[in-house]
Length: 388
View (tube, rainbow, N blue to C red):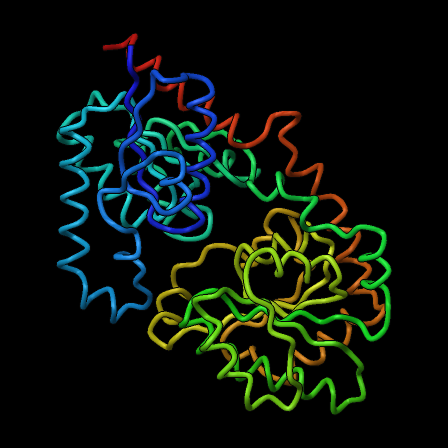
């Protein structure tokens, strides 16, 4: 009997999660599975024909969201109708909660028999904690990427939540140096990475202050080789922004070259986000920073419920990575902290010791995250069939 799986992923990271999940589900179900939904290039390679191009939802900033709100609402309605008409054995919503959860609510209201799995939890532990309890009404199971999330859902009285593992734990060989790369990492001049972000708004907010920070380091006589990994769609904006930097970085393009840079890096200056966990798993001490517009800063200050916004700090369970947010994100403060992580300081040693614990903290035993996720999706499908 054919099983129908409807998946919705509207960002590149979710698209990769969805593709890996599809691959394992096909291994388990063979030709008896049919995939439908919304996804990007990775999910298309696994056989998904997307309802619409996910690029239509690549909207950043409050002003842009307001301007495109009718379009976004239209796509939410269109997607929810497509799900209920397909009547799948399971709906898997992946990340992008502002879109996917609105679809899930509509689907649950229209057809409560369709089980719904949320892959990659919204950050209920950081802001909007009430969302966890609200999810009970329309999510049957949450697949968590971070080890502390199941406890957060229990504490906040949300739906069942299982840690399935972060996809980065399957990519450690591409993050960690071989013998030659380890020699370069320890060599002179040390390689310093600058990672301003993967969105145009982040490039706008970070490039100038990051450039001023590395310039101050050079003025203080600190030696380093500067590298700036970025993605193809940002290459032009990044190259244009570094023209005014007193210290010119080597700009490297694409995921493969970024990972190669991680493997030889001695330290990094990075915007907060998933990249901090990536660097920590790679064993690269770092300084982190983040700036947003004034309105967004006002909202976030009142919403955030955690002591640190640095993902690696949250997973480790203590604040070993310094973070400089908004008005604290200055060339002076960044350059001083960078000087510490570039040298054999207490801060650098503390970070390296903490990073060494991550493998144990994030372990999923001998099962890859995509396999653990597929097992729960299949169990949720079978449970729903028994109940109906």
